[in-house]
Length: 143
Image (cartoon, rainbow, N blue to C red; front, side, top):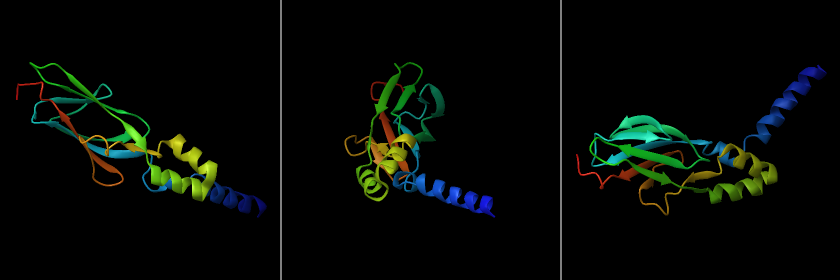
């Protein structure tokens, strides 16, 4: 009986400790749609991996910058880096409700961040977990 109660208590404690505000309300990843503006034949690469042509979707870590490269025959490749920013409201709520442990969990899992949609007009926030990125490939005249 003691072992059972210890197991139940341990699981309850772990679930409380690791369910921080950022993790609960956004997770450590987000969904993104990436569009090569006016270039449906452009190959889209993220972190060196091809993910689509013209437009693509993927699941990306919140704690990393998003590096998108467009390549199309007859054009120079274009790389655009999308910055991340702190999810301020979420971070403050973690501090108030969970203290330093909550902050550490949110920072460690990456759930304390989001794409910087307020300072970059190429990023559109659709929901807390969904973003749209538009890469301007105007240097490429081949359509």
